[in-house]
Image: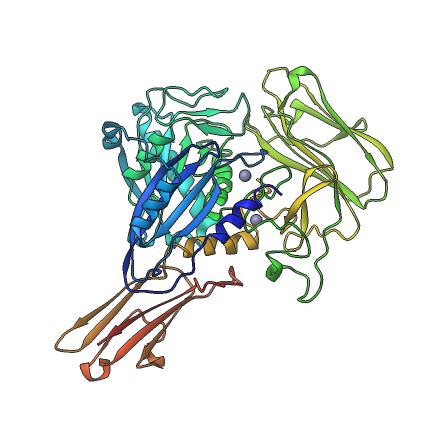
Length: 552
Ligand SMILES: [Zn+2]
Ligand SMILES: [Zn+2]
């Protein structure tokens, strides 16, 4: 349940908006650590064709989203509006310190390369990749790692449909040492990334000011991403999406962390921080009711499932076998075991048993952390059960990272196309919230490359909340006639209508360019652009529509 307060706060403070003429839009973001520390982390301006007339729009979100941790007190607060002085007054009232000074020499040396150019930065989402722990000699590795991950992300299914809205840049800043730190102690690197303990999960950044400076070196940095030069699993969501260059897990982590960063949502897995569009506090008031498989008007029942065991032990098997137990009432329909391990490249490296009977373990062939599940379509007998992980090789790096055991009641929907009310658990017997699907979302299941439908729709809302469908409308008057040219986002599924003096010209439908004799062109024109996609079912703010008018 933690985290709902952020959302309430952000909604309560949004000022009413009314359209006005073109204006400069100021955006200031500051960190609030909840202990009195408040400091600006980002300032930028945007010029808008149409801007809200007055008022300051305030939003807040968690600054860090770390695996299997409750959300911390640290928030990122964004103040936006046309009235720069009013924003400045608010910052002063709250005692927000100015941005930390930037090391100009370092920032000047940053090498910025644009990898994907889909249009003007002012009307695109600019994603900026930085690398930590790449020495000058590893410059080529940095660019090839980033290109590989960008290809994975945008040519694969995860973000493919959103790509036209994005520009992607890479900023290279050489590190003195190669690789990232462990046990919270960074190496001498550009942004000072370090792992939490010896684990393959959270990676923290100790020099955020340096990363913000590199972010600012790129065009209009909307979402900064920091990639650690490290072959294993790990990352963090929030202000910076952090992942590693791991060929086995780098993209897996990155798309999940970007889900947090761009979608402004929490986890869908058990034992996480929950907030945003993919979580609802009760089954009877789902935010995604319009996506639910149950017919309209029908109640959506909470899925019958019990978490029998739930932990993320980060247990090193050199200490001996890792064994857990639970009691079954013998009345559930089936059960399943979800876990992740690392350091076990061969299937013979681990023995997994349930009540002394061997369960299958299929290794992936590498040392990196990976996720696996065993789903058994029969009931567990009534009584006590024991699950045991034992290592068969003693090489010191065999970890059990997380483990959950579920029992499912009759009527539970396993079908990943089914959208309903699936409980997420804080602890056995303790439902934290509800999520939309069984295992269809990468915010829960690291083995899938897909977002669930509510997450997908929410991403459109977040992205189209900052960019417009129309880039520009240009009119040229010549002797021969009048030419009109419309530039838009290159999304497939755009429907275009041209209206002259309020009446549609059907012969111009879906045209982005036309030329008419002056007599036929004279008048007041309006072009209406609509993005039609099955990925959005509800658009309360009208973000999938845009229009421009011009008098000829
Ligand atoms: Zn997460
Ligand atoms: Zn989701």
